[in-house]
Length: 461
Image (cartoon, rainbow, N blue to C red; front, side):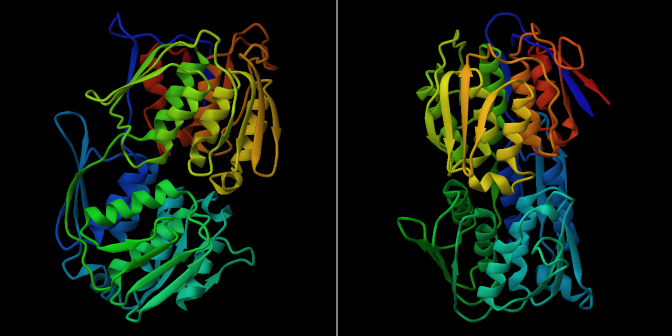
């Protein structure tokens, strides 16, 4: 699928006031909640859960482990998940499979692949972890580091240490210390989840607490589930006693700051006023840091504490560049890069090396696909330099998603701010973004939300 995007102004469909978008629930929270609920001692309820491609992948994998998950649509048009662990627990359920290797397909979800690829090491069974082409191209060496630290037997199907990977988990009754590099937060999260399946204590020592806000989110969920732990001030040392049980819970999922970044980018690109609802600035999600960055770029943004809403006001061409370390919020790279194209002056986004190991090499993808709009971007090993002229140097283009939902949404957001004075090579007054079906893995209603706000977007199947 591809979409055609024309320069637009976002307007209210109700008449009067700003355009409004209700931000979808957090994918990161939703998947963590589903996994821990599957390990719990009773039925858990997850309110306002996200229904997207990645969350569906998590549901499918957990159901294969014997977990019953029912999704209901509420009167308020939100989704409620009721999660019932196997009566005999996941360990007992897998035992009933008579030692057959359990193959778990994570789809496009790195969270599912890395979380469960580490968590299930604590169960004495054979597992095969795999996923789609994107997952099979992502580095699995951070999982191998965990397997070696725990003494887990494993084998990759290729020499490149990428999925599929087969492991032979085991009962972890001994106290163990895992010393890890820690650059990737997802395998570390999975290792912490394994603590609730083991009898022995787990000590995790990290050389670096990479993607720290996501690690904090995981620890917050362990607290919600009644798991006690100690953590050092720098989050490099975490100790969890074995034998603890996950308590069933009832929890509401907050709005997704990672998703919110793209309507924000669309508002700035189109120089429009936009109100975002269902967004909590106090949530542990690190991508709320986009607000501080945009304010430093002289964007006018106002948060309403009572409503839990955010308003982005027109910048009238007054947006400026800046230098920003986004190592703790790498998922903001595409959205911030789109915004920087409409700023005046140089923007440097640094310490982004980990972005090369997402659904695609996002550093290169941002550079190549925004370059198709005429953006002036220089790519370094772990930085991007974007020289903006308030969008005046941009022209219609035909970028591709490269199978990455954030690259697709970045391109759509940027396209809304590009005037047709310099038509692209296809000889039209619109931009054409290819491969946008991947947006469904995290923000299925993104295109429709923008169209309701007056965005000139045509979907072509």
